[in-house]
Image 1 (tube, rainbow, N blue to C red):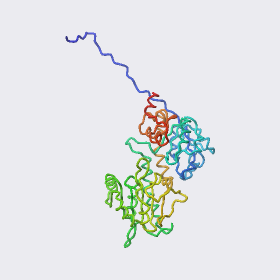
Image 2 (cartoon, one colour; image 1 turned 135 degrees about the vertical axis):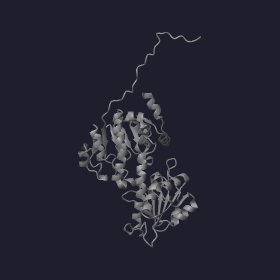
Image 3 (cartoon, rainbow, N blue to C red; image 1 turned 90 degrees about the horizontal axis):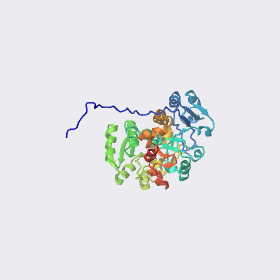
Length: 401
């Protein structure tokens, strides 16, 4: 039978449902002075603070928080921040933004349900520290794990670019007599060959180390365990240079004639592959320089151990080793601006969403950086490392809707 449509039939439109936009939230932000991890950077520059204050947010800055990057209290006060002299006052803010990992002394100052934006260094993290943060139901975001819309890690990339450039400039200094080096000019001159640089790792650090070394006129050879990364690096720098996979025999031959060796391999499961043995280092020329950029993940050289900016080098088998984990802190003003360029728009945008908690729900890239959320460990690798219970963040957020 054919369907019967009455003459009175009509379409009745449904009510339109619109998204309820949360009210803009005023943020209360605290920036403490860093006293650990050899840190000279500051997470927000005075220019970034001025933007936040002009958008209605309140910013507390501990006195001398930016002095390591030559940002002074007057710069912050002129930008609209309130300068405080007691660290505990800063930690009364609802959102804490740090350029160094949370220290044990700072955990005692944290208030329940605070939001902390900071890096995380797994080698220095302890189970007791995590348990205290869990008890206080802190929302902790590792800013190096924050992704942008393209799926990349903007802060990691910026710090890697700095580390690559700094590695070559630092090595050039330690080749000079002024720093008790053997007196070699990195780029050479007419009639005198340039220094030979071996770079182990063709990631962002390796690429920018190669750019700096080639720009100064050095001879560069690059090793990596990925043909794709080697091809990409050559395309990015726009010129051909010798490359090789990580063959121990070839690597040992190149290191034996190198003046500078830079270790910049990507970590596997959080640990950098150790590809240069003590025997290989022993066969290097006396007075040559090793820059182990991967030392914060264990190091690429068997002879490496962490050093500080106050005592950055040591000699082993007549080879100079520079193994500072936080290389970017050595150029703290540039590094501070790079971090601030990423964090300021995120913090400012979060107020439009009704706060950082709501922004975490809305943006996958921010959610990727969350490792603690209101008493739960939300990063499987951290939970596994310390034997703690893991809770999926997406499930947590779904139960709150």
